[in-house]
Length: 154
Image (cartoon, one colour):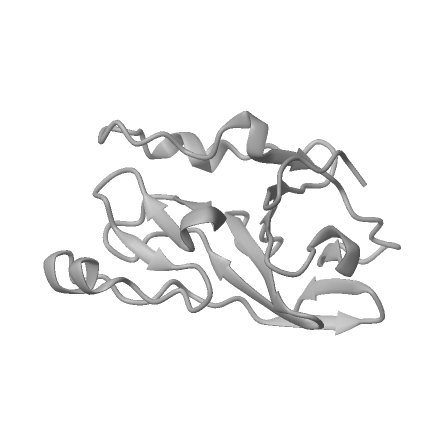
């Protein structure tokens, strides 16, 4: 499913015709660029008629990050598989001022280009500087359901 580039990757998924217009709402004023195009691989899961299916297990190799559009909120979100068979998902909405965070697997972080907030990739918790100076809280977890190899938003 798509080309794999590099040791770790950020994957992007979305049903055909769904645009991620919400990302443009938060401009990058800090000079920090998001993941490069070389880090992105595009893949769309077979949903079998279930519109809440966001990926298959094969779409999210252990240690990788899969970007998808949350079917409930319409916002970008991230799916991770930190250990075999364990899946977690986080909203991309920064808890400081609502900007969209990007995932950086090589530095184990989500980062907000608007104000520099940083969150742990595995837990969604803000780093110490972010929680103190920006009063940010953890990224919102998204409830998941796994049936066979299909991962859905619950």
